[in-house]
Length: 238
Image (tube, rainbow, N blue to C red):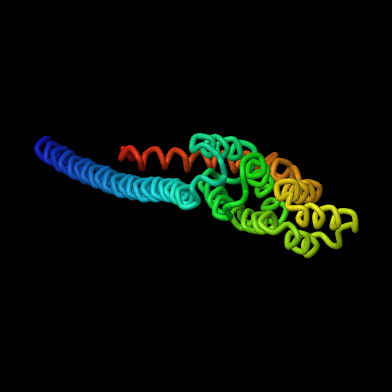
């Protein structure tokens, strides 16, 4: 049987060994917490860096589209007859009802303004139909605006362009537009061309901007708007 002294020695030894184990566990826990903190900081830094880059890029793109539009308006002497505030209102309104964001809409506005002979109501309807044509073709709205603008710059050429997309037009449609051009009734000829585009693709942008497509598109637009705001104000996620 162990003596009292031996029993005491065993108890001290066991206690000492247990203490060493507890200290090792504590050190491991501290190391784990340190690693977690470092990893969290690194991830947080990456997120902040990513947010910074995204915010600056979004703000830059927004500014570039606005500056480009302003430059085109100045170069054409405001030929479209649209007030600067209305360009913004048109872009905001179209962004709400189509899948296109305000930057691409402003690019489409710049494209139409550059033609120099698309004015007032014709311009507004051409911009709206550019979104419809882009949705119909699955293209970007500036590309659609370029196509539509060419058809308005030269309505007779526009007939050929439409026939490539949609097949042969009726003889009455062709003769009506050709007669308006020959009589020098330019705006009426443009309106007649727009009526044909309306007949072919009118409402396509709104029809395709529904359900999941609209929900995801709205989230993307709102996120881009947030990044633009942060980029312009110099604030990024802290």
